[in-house]
Image (cartoon, rainbow, N blue to C red; front, side, top):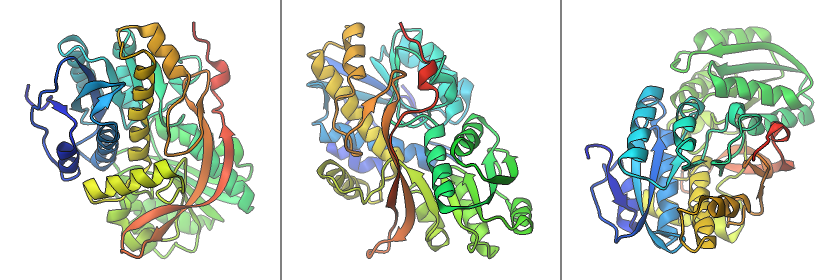
Length: 395
């Protein structure tokens, strides 16, 4: 089976997962629910995919290695951040391996590549991160659900935070792909001040010296940026080294638990907007953080939290169908109920199957044990519905 291997998610495999393991074939008792878990596990986005994968495995372990009372097997797929590779591997999972659902997906262009082959086969696709506008409005789908957010929402939350702070002039810097465009749209939807410059860079860019020079010359009240993975690591380091930390650093998916180990002190006191942070104080969240850190040895991010929630979302839905994953109408109705325990606390799903939830302004802090994490500062949006939901019409 090569790299595409089924594994039974036992506590042992979860513990190994945090340290770059290659899953071995472990057979679950039949019948098992088969899940294809898609994430970017190689290249610049690998850290994000690792958090996503480990969050899913931690969730399944918490659920006793079952979904809805049935044993579960997870087929981990590395999309390699290549749309054609993602489609090829996902088609094989659907046609050869007969998976019951597809979960995961870090990057929006990967989701856009696989959404049709998955949903046209009447297979449920639960995105634990990517949420492009193209699938949230008119392009919504009865077989597509999200345990995360619509892409614009965290950026809109940061736009509201910038507006609340009274910043008059903001410099915008994002990567040139769908999620970057959604980031700007989201930020602008709530920020009403002047955008002094709006720069788009390649998704592969790691040297930001030209952009940093422009920021210094523009002297904005703050910058807003969305730079995932290695892009965020380099930008934060270079921004701090350039002596620009006096200009407030407002971001989304740039300083979080997937990048903080590499950014370290350079990210201290920088801001992000999120649905959750490791210091969220409810029993489900506290238990998740404790068990995750014990198993993997690092602090979980939003990516891990949303994948953990995806496991609970599927578990609750399959329980409602009494383990019958073949009854697609019943499983859809169960998923649409949005009744599952979330590390975020209370939330519900909108008409487009994206969560209606709170968003927080968070700040990077250093814990007493020397590890870095984001911590909530204040709630920015309450029970927020994404702006595309009204355009969704599902039969």
